[in-house]
Length: 61
Image (cartoon, rainbow, N blue to C red; front, top):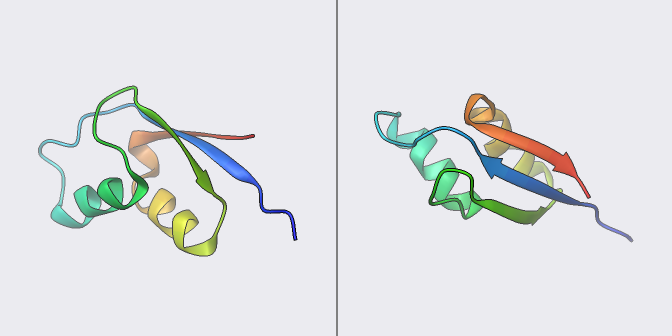
């Protein structure tokens, strides 16, 4: 089974956001603006991405 990966980039600041939204960013491994991480495309990760989609840029690799 080949799992696809996603490049996720944080485009907006986490300050002033809801605690659950901050927790999603921590779960995705994002700490700084313009930081990019590669994550595996799973339903759990997709759920966190959908929760904070207004702060992220997502690209398939």
